[in-house]
Image (cartoon, rainbow, N blue to C red; front, side):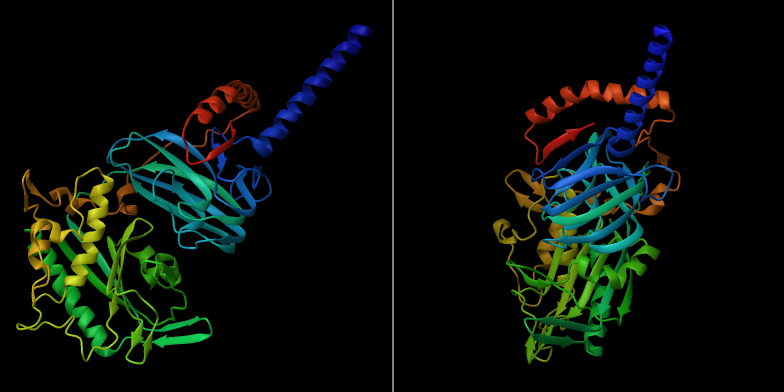
Length: 454
């Protein structure tokens, strides 16, 4: 009798333990992801069996206060190879200290690569991060409520995660778009700013975009070509970004609702925003810039081109043999900021685009910095140690696009257990590794304070 009772108790205990393991798995097993937050005890992480888009439980991050919280996993990658990370994301009451850089997003840890952050309350939507592995052999892919330069609070769910490896496009043809923002309606501190591009503005932008394409081919000595299109946006732009260095400008987050459908339809390699932010009667405050670059829309180079407030007095953008034979200079300059950034991220020693005077180049009336840009693009800047400038590979180092994944290889990223046996084995194996991993993480000088590793 005692033996029978003991057996029943053993079965009961076993079933109970398995039930606890299953419960823990359902809510807290993160498939080898490392969970981290910058500010301790501000964020909770769990798996959600109710809010999801497929058979697997979603990954949920909830921050009651502003924080940078993330779960990430390190994977092996091949050098100089395109990768795509996609998932479905849902948000609830997400607020950000800097909407341009923080929110719900996919992110590469220790880089600036991330998707455009999502804020507010939104139903399920697909987000995709394209990235080039460059010289890396390992990368940390993260799913984040926060960002590389800001904090967020609220709640986000990530579901249906996929990671794919593609094949890089080596074409030297750049597909460029210039979006003309025809309607600015911006209110700040009780003051209303309303501006529209004039027909002269639009004509000059189109003329100089044509010149930009020809100039890039000539300056690069035929190493690149540009195909472009102009898209006029009539819906009002109501949001601007601000920083102390530039004052107000158009960030990718500001303009995303207006141009997203066009960007999704085409594979653009660079985006210009043509805009008027003032006239002779007043303007949205800027800090002495006409063009502003070195930004990214997802992974696409992104630049502002601002029309001068008083076109009647400005010679800018007009070709004139006596006054300006290089009116497309602002387009060239901002585009080169993207190439400069691309190559520096790949470990090339590229001179700073603004260091022209360091190397003896000065702006010349009617020609501007034309000679500087030619030598910069042809790697023909003289120094005591030889010629420097952009490496020729810069002209084929374009953003990763969906077409790079026609014959993609899907990577096994989540590693969800397929049955109860696998589940039990994984849980106990992870428990065994927990202390080892935690000790390793504590010894690293990391950006994050890792609180749980599984």
